Length: 176
Image (tube, one colour):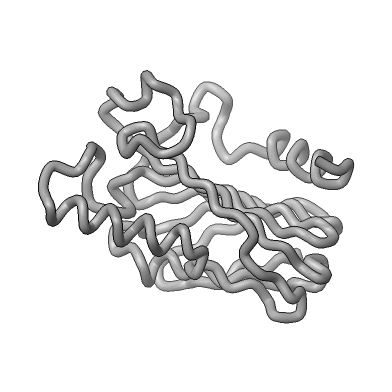
């Protein structure tokens, strides 16, 4: 991790959307999205109740639910729910999905038995010049009917700030 990346993430951590006591606050319809812009990389960290994405918060119990989970995971793995300003010339590099109840990633074992299951994701994009990006279009509302609001925190070389997207808005400006 380079120094700028470290500084950007420290900035996001110092600028929380919830207090540390509520760090796992769980609200249906609400998704949290952190965006960090570096010279040649743009990273998005997402935290969402599983219900927003598939309509339930447990392991799938039948074929229809398994198909719903597979379709949601495929959309997220493709990273096509995000479109970055073409001026930055970015392409998807790595997607990591974590959910204890779906047995994805390295989640906390205790979380698998919790009544409120989440899905966390990290999306990394390699860019020719990420600082040229002026926006990220977020297609989550189009892809997932259960989502109503997205709380966004941006850490970019020119500053940190928050944004809120409400259905049907989709564009996050990366400048103040």
